[in-house]
Image (cartoon, rainbow over all chains, first blue to last red; front, side, top):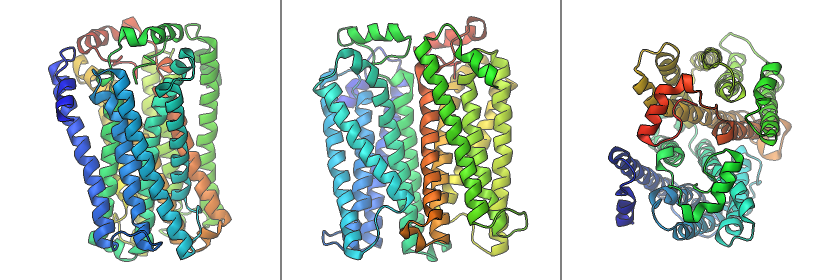
Length: 261
Length: 261
């Protein structure tokens, strides 16, 4: 992956300071994302008793880990591949984008099953909290977004006109879902802490500080990803051969570049 | 305000379907924003005992109301004026943008004082929760963003080159802070519910459902604002007289339009 990042960064059409900043920001985002996953693992593994698949609280512990790994880290990186490999063939980048999203989806579904299993065994009601409402909305929309992405872009059954119309919505929803996933994670962290370590939480106990730090890392990861994805100079440059139909659409709407997410 | 919105929407350079969708989306965002403020008022006023300034839980009740009104609704609308009045003189829009932000800042500071006052009287520790960490980060960054905005754009002490360099960061941070404010609000809703109405929360008690609905309305408000602000066709059209220096900068960096937030 490193050499590919290098090849993207060494593209001569992009000024050197922009390329260098981009590489540092991508590096920082990966450190933040991995640190979030590790911190979630340490929290659940060290402070909450580890992992198992037996309906106990140790099965619940898989829920935060799978969600942070799937819906936040992998989801964020699946979006980022369009910036990191912005000079590779679009077909390959699309395939990588959809494969990482598939992994994210599988992780998220395991995480969802884990919490529902645990609730059933422990006779805890489902879907009453704001965390569960936001989390469920995020997962359902994520599934819809993935299926729509497959149908519109990977095995394009829709017309070029419809694809160009849908693309900016797909791009917007991708970033929105990343933000919703991070927001839902923060709600989950708060719920878990208030259920498990009150009143010690208010005494700045190590577990509370670690979990709060995890929340801040997730916010920083989302912020960096948002910046990298929305900055104009990091976007995929238009390719006349790939984009002919879409450029026509762009002229019609006087909008942005609809086929360079 | 209605006639000004009308004048913006009736601009002939924008195709009719785009203008019409824009008007509907702005209307929907205002309904969602006002509904969020009203629901917060109902929650605190009806279910939590109303408002007062006496260090009691009724002073705390001003905290959610002021934050949702200031850091979410007014903050969102302060950003939106650049889209709604995108054909008015930039100087006037800037002034309106900074005045609404000033109101948002005043509201937020009242909300912050209210919660710290309440904590002091009730001897509750400050700043231990993820909600407080995220909320404090949002308010501090919001203050910095407001002062930087004043210095760079309203009473421009920086050079045109620096202003053009800073503008995309100012725009990005504005939207980021709106997202952070909404995220912090959701964390606050969750905290308040878990502190106040457990275990009734898990029985779908009306107060819990109302507060969860408030959370979903805030997410929808943020989503609509994010869409309206980032859609290319709703951006302020470049004005050759206002933008001469910046267009030069744009050509240099090959980036987006740096002076049309």
